[in-house]
Image (cartoon, rainbow, N blue to C red):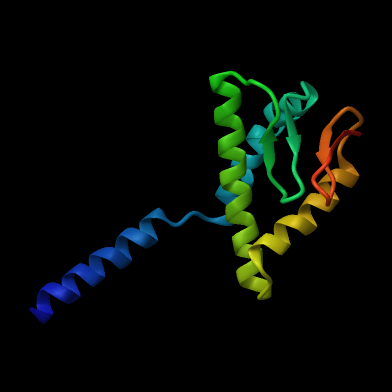
Length: 121
């Protein structure tokens, strides 16, 4: 019985290590998507919400929805890593990042303020 338990525990640990992504891999994917994300934001169909994520505001194509989902998944991983490293709350990391994103967003980008209102920058 113990042998089965240890075998399963080792297999689970190995699987987790195999699935773990490096910061460099995440960073590269985000760089690769940068132009597609900028194009999405330029349509005003997608905006930067006050939690640090992209949010669909109007209908998007399947490809646009995939870009949005992929970007948000990677942002979530980045915020979780920062929170773990700093001891901060993951949601607070996202909110702080949202403030910086809104500050640096180009004119025309839809941004959500702290109260939840959407405005075109």
